[in-house]
Length: 356
Image (cartoon, rainbow, N blue to C red; front, side, top):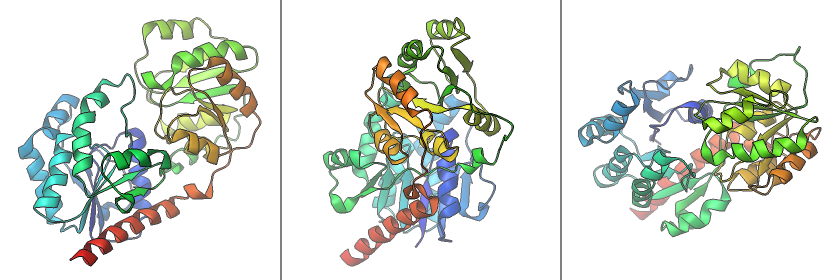
């Protein structure tokens, strides 16, 4: 069973997902086809890296260049895959060509893993890539999503039950848990961690903070550009907020989770996230909005769900979650999830064999 997993997006959380996948798949002929900046210390014999320009604009131009895409597809074809698995990045033009060429020239089945079935509000790049991404998904012979709640969308895309696979998110939390700080005590601290984007509900969190003043402080940590009026509001209340608006090393993230009594995710719209994984690994309960696949994740780990865009409910949820026990579900075991991917590949290839 020769499978190539093509994964153009390898930054931040997506890199942790891919590392987790390749480390737990016990099939020697599975290859991960990724940009050269992908970091994974082990299993280098399973990783095929391709070169990319350094700047973001030049990277984008490369992925839009059919000649460049053809060159990379030759490298994929040289691996003699029985199946091509496109993991995320379905909106890239090169992804469309790779799926098309795999089906028409190599005559092999394909599967696309769709992390965000719908674009997040406020993310202009995701909105721009949404329509071409739909074309790539519909061109594939199979689709994989990360939550049962997105199965109706798969049906809209034209996939039947046999062509649709639901496999939960997989994240390597050891990147964070390897750093331990026994001297750091829990505080009355609610932690928001992750890239700061419009759909993640930071204004809702700021409004909720007024209801927990004197009971909880709130740490907001992660890269991304916040509007100036939001920054001013945070900096004007140092008794209530602390801001770490930058990329944080895994050790810094670990220290924050050691301090936190609750992890808060006030998203106004969501698909799924690696944050509940990290919180559960540190025993930190999660309060999140009941939206997308995130809701099922939070329920699995014994977290607290609240309605989106409701600051008072979010504040009450934070206070309720403090002191509760966080569970790391057995269903999140990376070995089990890797096994589900392998089973997906076997089912797809068995059906192809049976149809010949």
